[in-house]
Figure: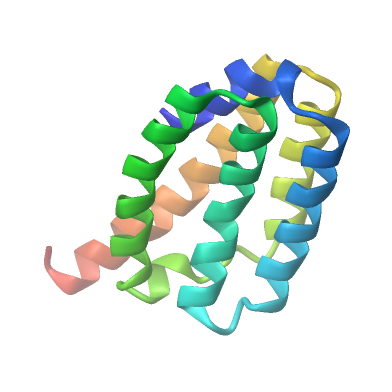
Length: 128
């Protein structure tokens, strides 16, 4: 859902919004050792983009998704960033900056698929 929302809004995000999202991505990476701080900043990237696009209904949806992010952050290892986090999110933001919603969706989906694989493995280890 998040991939599609951001993809649909890609052509509405301002240059300032993309810049702030990139700064937030770098801040998240700097906090990668602190899982909760990393997760909050990682999620903030999407909030910045949605706010920049000025789409209030999408922001409401994002707030709902945010609760899931918070729960996942409590699992700790599930939110350890991928080694190529900045490359993956940076490529996604490149597509947003180019106003290519389809490519942005594809790139963000790829990022989430990698995270989902990690989460599934963690849940299997935990017996959930």
